[in-house]
Length: 284
Image (cartoon, rainbow, N blue to C red):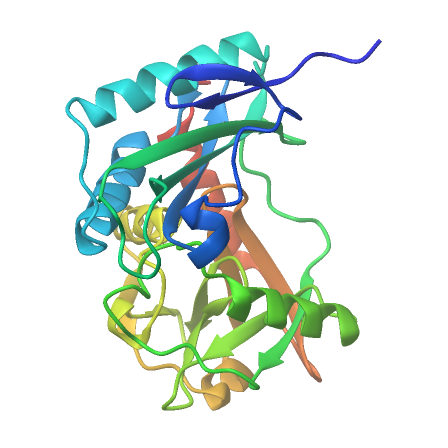
């Protein structure tokens, strides 16, 4: 027997497969939207305040209007949806915000709607991958630094193109570069390298998403008295010369990289950081 699943649109529940948008939806027409992917463990929602701060900053940057008591409503609606869907283990929450219908490129108004979805995760906490990732570089399209590059927006064509390249090359992920040829991030994660016992990650001004997990790992590294530089211009040469490489996002925590072309890497620092991350994040 199939379990009934729901989604939440502006706090109102709909069946997961129910049609809720028309063809004039601005997220569909123009990518006029932002989104957050959020990890939950039962009704404990990890780093929600940080996600909502980034989302609110993006909403203001796009000229949208933030409703009154927005953060409180979102927290309440996410918790209600988790309970309604009986999502009591590891859960991925997708929170999408889009400008309301009306207008062409020029919006008819700047009011917003929001959609909340849940999907199950294999684990309720962060687990380091046993098999390291094989990664490459995607160079056909560059990711430029802009007002929008730090946010997750509905315009994801660059990431889709890079992900298709990943599949074509039989890789687990691809790194993106900016117009200066520096490493920015991967298709869905921020990137860290370890070189001579120093932890490094590209700065937001390189074009990287202002990752929630990125910030958590920076804090964890400082707690562990690791040397970390969070505003690096990393080149492809730095990837070749790294001792370790790992990727981070709010859903998986850390994924370590075993191979970049003919180079092979270990995961000593990744193991230390994910242990610290779990200790600081979850109630055992």
